Image (cartoon, rainbow, N blue to C red; front, side, top):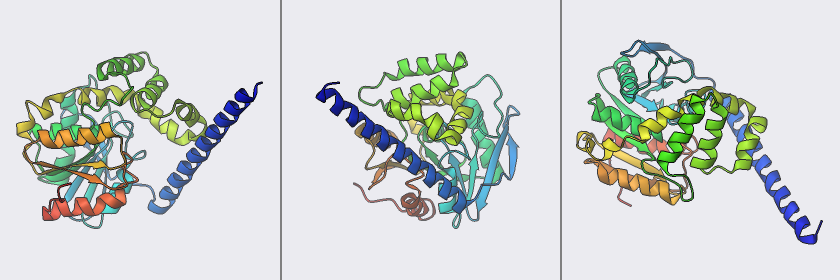
Length: 314
């Protein structure tokens, strides 16, 4: 082994050790959150128009607020618990498992309209109308709901990734076909790895370590990886920012993290420009990690939903 090779090996050893340490910290943080917040208890299910049961959790008191998760997320694996807890003192927060996830059903064939009907069923359970907060692809689903005429009072979108292709990543059409093919072949692990590494840019070493170092989290990811084509179908429908943008007239706040990659921040700005009644806001110090942004998001959402107060232009 040459001196250069030895130096390179040591460098990669330090990187690997750093990744292991980072993952261990994430696991510890997730454990602490679970101990502090406790598990969210399912209060029931609603039937969607096609008969699919949609499981939900209700927490807090006040005006109804519905949370719509993004890809690979559901009530027990994602930001819903943290967002609900942060807002439960001012809102009756409804978190639900999108179809195919958690305790909800998954009637075939899939169509975006079925997911809109699922959201409508949860709104009906909550009352006549509701505020809605959607994150990532869930934000785009929420836009679909407004465009379809659901009784949504106002809308907050966290980093809707429309046309958000990371530099060096595969074109969206190519990525969608790859994920669809892997899921159709029964390779959920391959689909999740492709989504995390190729599309999101997560270091491949970290993705490879997840089944070992984050076994519980990886098991949850695997339980919903077959729904990735659903999210990509939603992201592939750009009608909500062109032909049907005129139908999204409710007050809308499009939020991004100031520490998110430039291509995500640019998507936030584009969506805000394309909608007739929207403003953009970048939260200092935040990224695409919605759970990590919960504390910073809470006062912004509280003011926007209840006071109609718009954030200052940035």
